[in-house]
Image 1 (cartoon, rainbow, N blue to C red):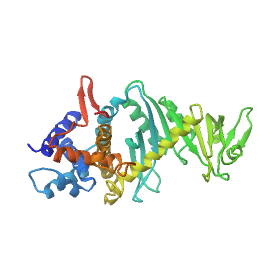
Image 2 (cartoon, rainbow, N blue to C red; image 1 turned 180 degrees about the horizontal axis):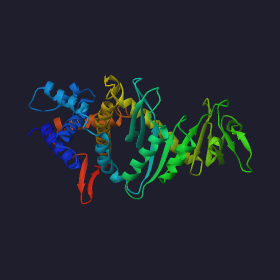
Image 3 (tube, one colour; image 1 turned 90 degrees about the horizontal axis):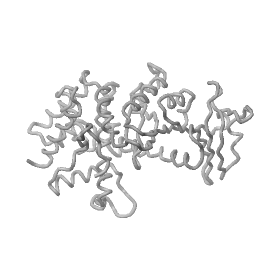
Image 4 (tube, one colour; image 1 turned 45 degrees about the vertical axis):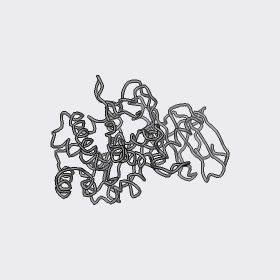
Length: 372
């Protein structure tokens, strides 16, 4: 049996085993879609169908994938609730950074995203697809509370979690939601002197936040209270204004401030690289003509599994010293995800062997393996 066909069969069987409560007629197309998307590097069902080694016409496979996208009986919440504990199982006892972001999609939707920082990428762990520039059915905090609860329920024992967010996201409600599930919060506040926050210092002195900023080169940390309209919340403030930068970082955290918080916040930028991989330079989700939010949700569950698998393959190739086969020497030109896709094709087509599946069965269930 050709390696690509064997991998497809083994992966399909694993997906069915991962989702025992899901109909086989839903789990099998999902498996086809995910592996085909990894091979194609595109979300378009026609491009995906062309990569799959099936003994039927590409047009038939294309239609099968499209029917899965429009099938209202395919419940993304059910699929992801089952898969997420296996995806996170190998993270037991580790400190985790979760990046909170609301990237827009084609002007039609906002994807409220919570992603796990993994090396130089952010892999999705929870999301909500919401209408863009309209009144949402519920307040943002309601969605965040539900997302936090879902991820908290899926975490293995011993994890410590910090949620990182950019300006526009921090609020007393978000910090309260993090604390409710036992997580820490790290958010950047606006450095706009005209629209900035008020803070309360020791002795209950209330001052504009900008009054604490002295100028480029400043390094300062200390306890404050913020969010006056919500009756204040105690946090640690870190001010970091590197020389040559146009504005400072004003970071508030539920942990002690300082250089460690600056290092954590820097890793939020990895989310931007992940979004690039999803858009025109990668899987090109922007080219999708899907406007119905429920169908976009189903497409995202496929894309997010493809991102997890591609990232795993890329890290495995780099750790084994195989990056030179797919990328230039010196600084990387290709992302971890593109290296992973190239390594998979090389393993199947040149070495003619089937690589390990993304999940490994253990006595306690399945584990998504990051190490080779």
